Length: 255
Image (cartoon, rainbow, N blue to C red; front, side):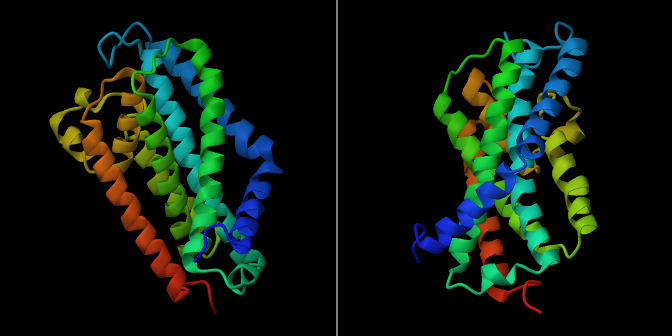
């Protein structure tokens, strides 16, 4: 198995070109949406609430919006590609070549990471104009951005394999991905929640991705970044194992 094989590179570049050809929809639109969130929530709540010591609410909000954009767009990339290939019938051209299951998964996930990071960087460039940001631990920013995008890219592969039509994929995103990201501390610190919801939040793996990412900016977080890293890494390995198993079995891929 060679992750730099011709097959892997071909599938990877195919996935890059797929979203880049419609960059207005896949890159620009999410950036505009995140900017609107910042303008609305930042205008209403800045100066009225404070989530971290010495950090304005607008500044607190920016890393959350960046990471939310990274996660949602990484998921959208791999999941939409697979469901489109299944519905149009061209998935056979991916399954027939001598590509290993790891190479197929890696190509989809790495392309999803590229899209997620591209959107996240765009959101950061636009929203950073409205807030004062520090970079206390930049390595944590990079690590959690890469892991978060990789996890959601892998989850997108699983969802794309499972779904048989677009409304099933939409349900997966609307009832799982979107609530999990919105309730992961994007707009608030979970320490501000009542005890019951505080406990529930600790079972949301998306929370650890966002909390660890935000730690890289301010050096403050709701849990230790090392705890977040351990949980996120385990979650990534578990999802990758599930995705590879589904590809190996040809679950809903071969008829």
